[in-house]
Length: 260
Image (tube, rainbow, N blue to C red):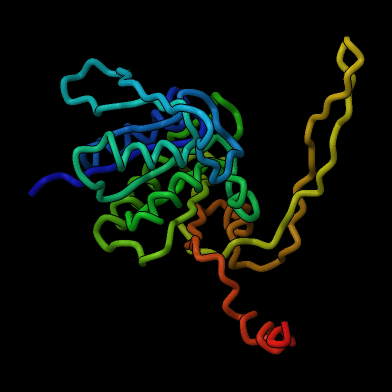
């Protein structure tokens, strides 16, 4: 029986330590092909390249004869998945895993996440997909405590499948391996960012802006991703790319729109 084919991607770039950790973990589970951005693409959401050419090249990080094929891509995380599926893979992957992101993609952060958008792009194509993030923004973050949880979740997904139209958003708290209390299936916490711009002036007198903000959690539920992470659990949120608010259809049907 052939090994599962695992597509690995991310948004922090192909050299990111989180990606290198994910590649190492996935090599224990199947045949790995990596297609990832050639530079950081954090916060890109589901952007795709339309007005520029895309470039891809083969890169080598490991001279081991069994090392996975790896490609860097000049585009966004979503571009990487599109290019992988259409041009670079020799067959359809059994699963796509994205990450491990440097920083949380829990709660509202999932909206902006390039990590999750890469996974969602695979999900749109009907491929089981998971995005992984570690709640540590440091480039020198220690990803080793996350490895067993990552392998466990991917193994279970390969064995049991992921419901159609669903992509898993997995976040791992910043704790050592002894501090991880387990894995919890959660809902996305209700939160947002209270944002502001730091206005500055460059030496030529031209104004410029840095976006800053403070994360505001507005949810006290003990079934959310933010609660699970605060208690030392890995959070797993089943997300969907059908954005229809089905509960609202009946109410909006009461509007007097038929006279238009």
